Image 1: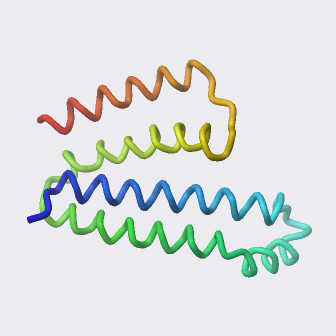
Image 2: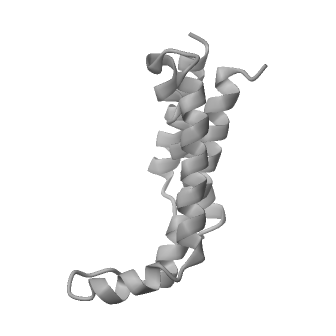
Length: 120
């Protein structure tokens, strides 16, 4: 039997993967401006990373719904904060973004909060 915690964690992993794909896709599309919206939209529909990202987020949503069918929202929702930590980590490792010490400290506080919520 699948535990609610496992369902939430899988949902978060798919969502984080989706966001990384979306970021990579938009890096390929470039900056979107209102005057050039048509050209940007044309580039978007030809960028497979955007579709992979949306698909991954959709799969994550399915796991999230499965988790919600089993537990209280007040327990499950705070666990989504793990996604913030994973985005921070993978943004630094994969996307080579600069992450400040203050952000890392915030991530550590989030982890402490998630541990407290998951044990309640």
